[in-house]
Amino acid sequence: MEIRDQKFQIQGISLVELAKTYGSPLYVYDGQKIQDQVKQLKEAFSTVKLKIKYATKALSNINILKLMKKSGTGVDAVSIEEVKLCLHAGFTPEEIMYTPNSVSFGEIKEAVGLGVMINIDNIPMLEHFGTEYGNSVPVCIRLNPHILAGGNAKISVGHIDSKFGISILQLKHVHKVVEAYQLDVAGLHVHTGSDILDAEVFLKGAEILFDAAREFRDLRFLDFGGGFKVAYKPGDISTDMKEVGEKVSKAFKSFCDEYGRELEIWFEPGKFLVSESGTLLVKANVIKSTPASTFVGVDSGLNHLIRPMMYDAYHSVLNVSKTEGPERVYTIVGYICETDTIAADRKLKEVQEGDIIAIKNAGAYGFSMASNYNSRLRPAEVLLLDGKAHLIRERETFEDILRHQIDIGL
Ligand SMILES: *Cc1c(COP(=O)(O)O)cnc(C)c1O
Image (cartoon, rainbow, N blue to C red; front, top):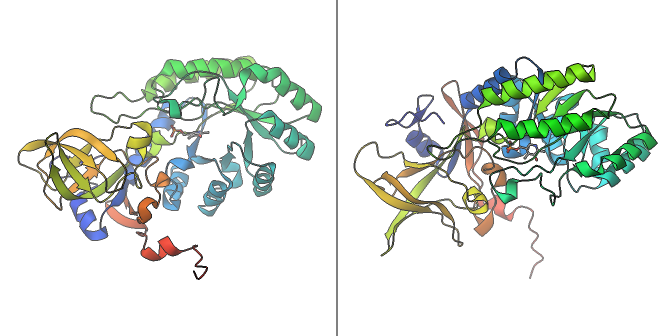
């Protein structure tokens, strides 16, 4: 997030003013930052046929999807609803990859009907697919390379016990199914987890994918999933995209030479594209000193941003209402009846009731994981583009809490 320190502006727009205009809590996204991230990825892979499939689940407002489309990305969807959302936002079926897990074959059929590429992650579904479509519909196969990667056990999905993908150890079985139904395997896919720092981890995944790919004759693409790491803490290192780009492109090109065809290289970043663009603005409701610490209780919590509680995620916080003055150490907590610590023991400019606290790096898995827990309303969302603020989602109202509930007249 390009908050210019001291003034706390993004694209020349004051965060405090945004909170005044649209209320709090408020999700704010910097459209320029998203476009910059797309550009960075494209430049890192400029020597190969790159396709970016933005992981919709990270942040799925249709305006964000449209911005991605304008920036030249495709999308990866993990539910039939996400597929429909992406179609609604203007993506063509060819631009959409559907990577479901544990869904019924009915949902896969529906997705095939919508014309999107299906990424199959288990052998029984591959057999269903073969029975239904034979070689008439191309398909992608999600492999599990069993690489341990990712910043947290909950986001590491490539290990031996993971529910995701078809184990690389079951490739023989995969080939039997492919031959039996003459499947048209257009692509192979791996996604090993989130928060992968290293070019080496990507290369390790790539080597395993290349080995598997040699046995498939008619591939059009290889998909390396998402998982690039972004910096959350001061001093955190993010994935060196230039280095990953150079190393992976080089390995990819020599594989293509050997394979005898120039394949497309696909990536499905979520976090990398949208995390830093997002800021959650919340308001200090109460400053409460205990013998141990000073809490700032804010008008939000794990219902709006669950990452600190679910993934032990670190989010930088700042008091954007104060440009000067002394700093003190605070623990920022939410208003939910759970221990929902957003940030512990942080130095902030002295906080007073009503101050606006900015929670940074909240673009990915922020709003998209928000809920109505405690019967609280989900926040509004604002997108900043070309120095202008656009409301892209209204704040919920009490009617939204009652919607779909049926009063049986007790
Ligand atoms: C979640 C997910 C991604 C995106 O992961 P990030 O860590 O946000 O980059 C990519 N591909 C698949 C299949 C996913 O499930």
